[in-house]
Length: 387
Image (cartoon, rainbow, N blue to C red; front, side, top):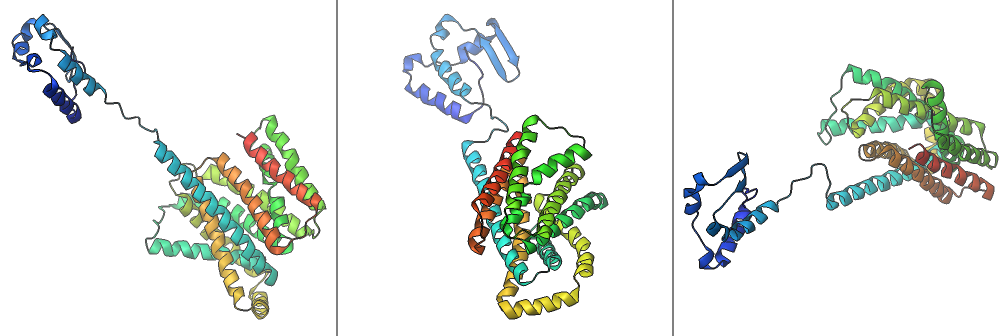
């Protein structure tokens, strides 16, 4: 029986090779089969596939040659669409690992330089404005020079981006105000309580309900943040409230972004670039009104006289690294699931807290460290329970 004969070169080569190894007695001409074609029962399942051909007794003795050929032809397997090869899977994991490592490293560097700048130049509104301005300039240059492809946007895109930019601006400025008043580690310990705000806002404003494990995971988050706050040696109410306001603002930013950007074909990198530009337009007039050029000029002169030319480098570094770490985080969202991103964000806070304590020699009590550990552990449990 001849089954599924396919026009595959490898199969024909295999048949030819077998025919060369068969003894001359078994070799035959297909002409007898053709001559007896009218007398043999034939069933065709498709125009390109012969199902069954009944052969005479003499011809059946020679059918082994065709069996080998049919076997070779049938060895071809269909290509499975959407299934990644092991090499592609390992490559994707490596890519995600590089994203995470870059994200954490850039965030640590930003927080270090940002705190150095704020210690010498305590003007968080201007510092926040410079961070957004630097990122906006970097992306504009990359679009003009064709290093990155400019996004295709319309008026509807900018309308949906506006509430996201408002929340992003408030969260960014509030976090910078917090770090100008308290230690970097304390700010990030309080900011680890963001999941509690997320559940509260989603429940009150969106009517969402969550399973019991999610609510239970909030207990260590709230308890750990409270323990860290009451045992903080250099506690400052403005710094504490800045971190809390930042949490609330970023929760609204995530909600507005999720609801408004559905169906928008803008990459994570370009989306954050547009967000930075709109936030820059929003924050600039408020920065001038709250602090003003006169305060900035006096503070800048004082910082340069105390620190020297390195102060200028600190300002540039904190501005550049702020944009880069946020850009990488938005780019990673295109590659990973929200759960993986939440776990990565938790690990990022741990790296920032540990690095800042080591570099700035931040005094910390054992009970304060315990509170931070409980809060971060609660954040991790929350990210697992929410799924």
